[in-house]
Image (cartoon, rainbow, N blue to C red; front, side):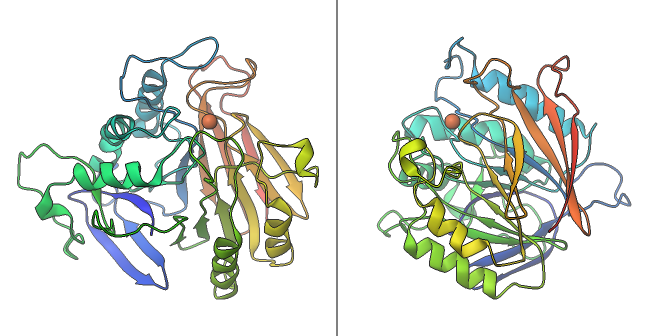
Length: 337
Ligand SMILES: [Fe+2]
């Protein structure tokens, strides 16, 4: 079960579910109807840390996460650098404690993407709360719209209604939610595996857990034909010794054991450290997505990343809020192992 906000009033031209996966290809509205939209271009964001109160600041020095997100939203929706078919947010979506009001603001701030026809996939971070997130999606959806979007793709909301995000597959209030929210998103060139490393809200370390790793293994084994990009919130513990990286992914070794020899795994995207960095481990690209909210190192950019998928690799373009940042528009081309 994912937390995905689906677009309104846009034609879905392929949809289906298979073993907990979704193949969801939408038709964003970037321009003329005849314009070809690539399903190979994505916007990747991380650590948006949106508070309920839009004026609230965070970090040191303090900045306003909502202001940052609005600048990034403008940049993405301008289509200037590329025209993504969807967004993935790799965790720490809200401020610190995963409060209901935080999620209300978060969903409102992402609404313009949905209006543009872009689905948004949210991944859980250590400052998220699954139940509060699911409740917010459920509560902001008009009852009549909490249904599968019709195949025709026409708007499921009455004209003129104040539109709030629509969630699909959101369980009812009395349904027990799974301990981890994970999802496969199938696209023409790659399969994304969205993983959940949230262990405890506002508790720094992350943990996938054996159950989720087994799910990942099974899903990978049934999709050997296409490159796999894994996305989660926590940074791997590269030291191989969890004592040295107490805030990292605590079951890094078990995770790497599952992915190292599965040749279809080409990249792992994560956030958490609020750092822009790429490196390679066993031939797998490790891509650290920077934060849109605050930073721990003042040299780091507030930024998002445009991901362009290619036949044998991918291209990453960093888009900084500050166009004078030395990393702004940095392009990193990476080929698959
Ligand atoms: Fe964060």
